[in-house]
Length: 192
Figure 1 (cartoon, rainbow, N blue to C red):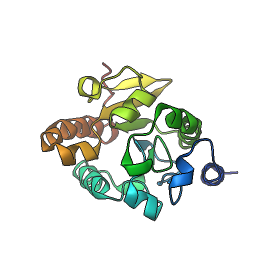
Figure 2: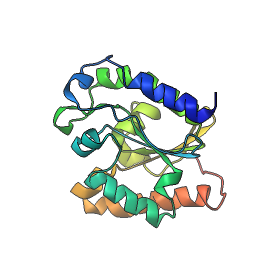
Figure 3: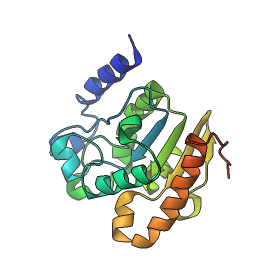
Figure 4: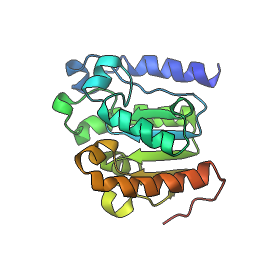
């Protein structure tokens, strides 16, 4: 079975998940999208209302901003894999609870293993805490490459944070430039 089929089978399994109560309140599971062989993966927090309605990650206002950020960094959305920590929309777009994160984390870990990206861009504090370090503060670690088990992680602010606070746009652009240097120019990530 090829990588794309394994990822598709895993998505079908995740869509049947009832490990937490989030599935009861959402319209559909937002598994993720992108090529099964993507070298760059972006991981956010959880689906919002537009994502829940359409079944696709990052399609609302934050997703439109993310698309512009990717384009500015010379990344084509069709070439990256985009997912979230949790696959079901939390009520009222609140942050997922620790129990919800723990219930969904094995799905994300398997998804990452199947895609096997070289680089992961953590979008926001929850992705950073979940994937890098539970004690990490996004304001302190954003823009710093972290190597875990042979994979490189780069935390940055979530696009929704930029919509609330435009002053965060410059730091995100700095982070995207670091990502560009590694992905496009072949530079080695400079760990913290």
